Each structure stands twice: as C-alpha cells, then as structure tokens.
Length: 254
Image 1 (cartoon, one colour):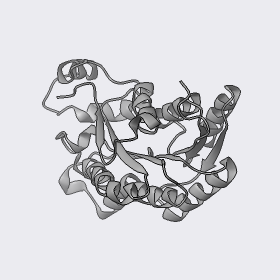
Image 2 (spheres, rainbow, N blue to C red):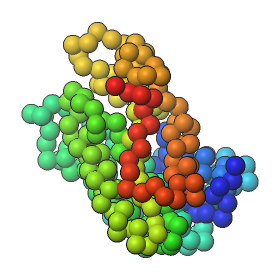
Image 3 (cartoon, rainbow, N blue to C red):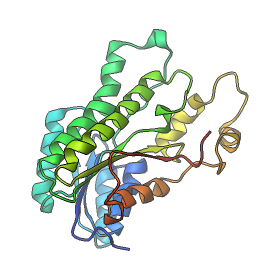
C-alpha cells in the first residue's frame, strides 16, 4: 500500500527504535521523510541512505527537541527542503526511574523538556506548515495508565501528552488537522532493553520474559514495526475521522 504518496513527514527521534521503524514504514507508504536526530548523526544518515536506496525521498535533520528554537528550525528546514509538511510524528523521548525523595528540579526539567514541552512545541511549529488534511501523532506510553514503581516523573510527562492531544483536537480540527497519540507498551528497542528491569517491582522474582508472559494478553513485547503500523494508519486518510484520542498499543497489557 502507498497511502502516503506525495506527503511529507517529520519524524522526531527517528535514528533508532520506534522512530526508525516509523520512518521506514511511512517511506514505504510513499511519504518523503525528514529523519530527525539529536546526537546520533551516523545512525540517522545510515537510515537516510537505506530509505533512498529503496526509492524514497529522505533527509536527516539535527535538532534537540528540548530546545523550542531548534524545533522551529527543524520544521522550517524540513518543509523547505522537502516541499512542504503534511505529517508530524513526535516520537523523541527519554526515560526516568527514581524514588520520590531522589527527584530533583533538574530531573523534572530534563524529562518534561523533551517528553512534554518538546512535543507541544513540535505541534506548534509543525502546525504553521500544515494545511487541511494534516496529521499529527504524539507519543505517550502505557505508563500513563499503569502504576509502575519509581516511575512517577516519566509517567506524568507522558500523561500530559494525552491531555494535549485531547485538547488540541478541537483547535486544530477547525483547520481540518487531526491530532492523536499512541501509548506503546513494552517494545523491543535498545531503550526498552535498558529500562525493562525497572518495570518489574523489586519484590517480584520475575525475569523479563516471564513478566511479559503473565502481564500481557499476547505474552510478548511488540516489535517496533508493529507500533509503526498503527502510526501509519493514524496519518493516512483511513483515519480521517479520528482525532483527540490516545491509542494503546500494548498487546493487552494488564
């Protein structure tokens, strides 16, 4: 299927993990893709080479989404280089685990700057370029709905993203732009590999594989391309009447 032929997409945090899978899927469906990265230039350029080799238009753009000015430059540069902007997939994010007594103002600022403020200003700057039919997908997490030990700061930063999608839907809907969020569960990425042990309560004597078997209906982690498939649907015309919603992609986590 090439549901996105002629469209231009910006994917933040696209050099690895879910973002990389999203960029690949959108390109496969016909979109030109701006591959955003913060520090890993090599991985971003490697992905661009891969996409170009498949016949897609793709370019790498460096920007730290925790810096609003850099977000604005990213959207402007991508729109100019690729001929407009139709889709934003705001994927960049960082993890945090820590007990209440150890959380510092610096921790709060760092996590919210990327996970929350970064997504808000990505929407603001992308919206300057989007016309009717524009699509925005933000990234929340199953953690916004599931109590996880020592995960308060991260979960709060993601819950705020869902509130943004819900409330911005009416405002952007006046321009026929949709905005939704996805809430992935455990996914096989390098970020997840580092974080997964922290998701298991220290009093539960379970390894990762056993935990996911007993805590999700499908009994396994998602692959990044499975998350990307839902994103591709949300940014296509097939999702024309869905806005303001957060879609869980968690394999039936309970």
